[in-house]
Length: 279
Image (cartoon, rainbow, N blue to C red):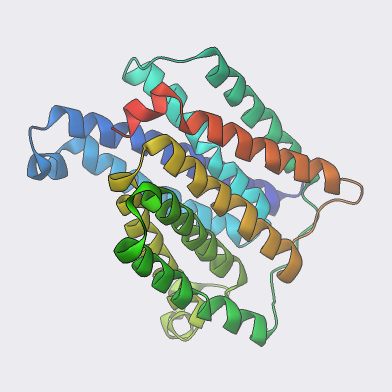
């Protein structure tokens, strides 16, 4: 692996660790505060929010170099980080199946690191970029409709799945956006890129829908559905439309590794330690 992909993979791993630890920090802050206003001012909670932001920025940096399927699978590994950290910090219970799922996650991510082919900068056609940007609108509209008219028994599941699609859409926009070499030196060019605005819409939509899903559903099933949608759908789009590649002969292995990561995430989403960290 050359230096640039290795650095990008380090960014993705840092994002997963950041997301995983931030969940525990926010839970610790909420537990120690007597009310919502106190929670929002708690140092641990604020530290978790800040870590979330840094993790998000790290994931965006990784997506500029690595294929979407690899970055999203690595980020799904944040559940393993949450479970282990909650065990160490909050004393949460860790089942045997959780330990196995953590081991599967680590092994699958190692396989994905080896399976990723050499990636060129994503340069999708203008029509493809327009479709990706426009997709933010129907996803947001579907989320709004689900919060208003979805039957209560399935509200959490539907909005959790749509949140995953929204976060996956944000990942695709980050991968496909055409930006200057040093974006911070040319903010006008960044603002002129439609996918930047679509990324913002996807991100806000996903955040609001996930919060709504957690209010109306159980954290385990909701989080599992979110990661399934966030990994599988954008991974397929990345390979099909954005030119993401797999090393020759590694296609089936990479697909199995992505599937194993999603299955492990589903198990870990139901782990007592994860429930303790998101309570």
